[in-house]
Image (tube, rainbow over the protein chains, first blue to last red):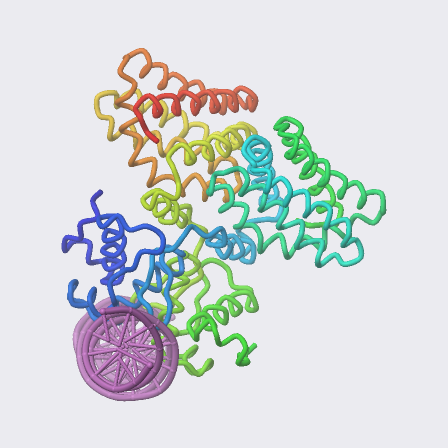
Length: 238
Length: 238
DNA sequence: ATTGCAAACCTGTACGACAGGTTAGGGATA
DNA sequence: TATCCCTAACCTGTCGTACAGGTTTGCAAT
């Protein structure tokens, strides 16, 4: 690691150096989630920079969810949070650097895998919760808003059941975008049979995961996404 | 919109509010990459907060690579940068919330797909560059450091050739971690034939992509990762 | 119309101040 | 002695001001 801040790296500014120093501190002290970081004043003195600089460095790390800030309390090392990447993706979509179809292609790729892994690694409790969301979706037939929330929770729960936090991270990254496009997809399924079919896929998928059948789970997830993309294209989503 | 915040959202602090105001500004004005944002002083006046707060908000967005800061110049909306997510993953690994094997499982999932997409969508120029990196790896047989750089560039170039920026984003996120584990994987291939085989896979993969054969490209990428994971496990990587 | 320079503007950093939340220690009480 | 409460010390959040550079703009001279 070349990050020992010699002078030549100063071009990036004192804040960047301080960010590096803080992450180095976390590494060197082998801090884990929940552990406390030094106070702003302490770092300020130690690195010979103003508290302003330390604060901006802390803010930067907090924006990335690497640390957590609380008024009065010291900053702490943060747990991985699946919401960390959401702003990034949303920004990409808003600025038209990412299209909705591209989001769905990535989701399909990732979630076909999470479905398989979840079948193999889910706890009984997780299998129950996943099925619960699938059932709840059917119960919310007349309140799409709520149905969407269960759908989102359904997918996220599967990602968590895959027992690989990176999958939860990525699926979570798309949550914001999903929330914006979901209603369009739902409305485009004008035929009630299409709507029922979509709900049926969710239930079948939940059952496949509960039954520990990775092949069936993968296939159903793939089917689900193919069907969703078709619905979105039919609705004219670019 | 001037977004006069009512009190109920104040709990998150003025900086968070300001971040929201800035992202809202980007959305409302439909700003794209390169477009300039208002000066700190202007936002400060408009939102009735100190410049300190605006600065911390700008810093937060810069940490996420949503905007770019330059001394003297105004802040600009940033282009999606594949390096944005790297700190997040590295933090997860350092704090032992993510294991190397989990990283490789995600990479395998993603890159099997990028290989297929790249076969279908790469430009001739990209096919050339990809093959170039594969060949360069062989030329660097005695300088693993350089070989690693070509390997990383090879994978990233394939992701770019997939013509979906999210894939490049995700592959880029693992760059830092890869740089830390790659040497271990290479050294664990003690048999020279294993080393040659690894290089051969890269070359075959490059050719498959150049030939526009998505199935073969996918299979080779899968093979590559299975082989890499085996090497890492043999080296005792957890 | 072009060029060049100076003023206006902008960001980066520092310092000081104070409000309000949090923590730790010490003293009073039982 | 053990417990409880209160205060003092500490910490973060926000504000204001100041000033050193870097950047842009517009005017002025050519």
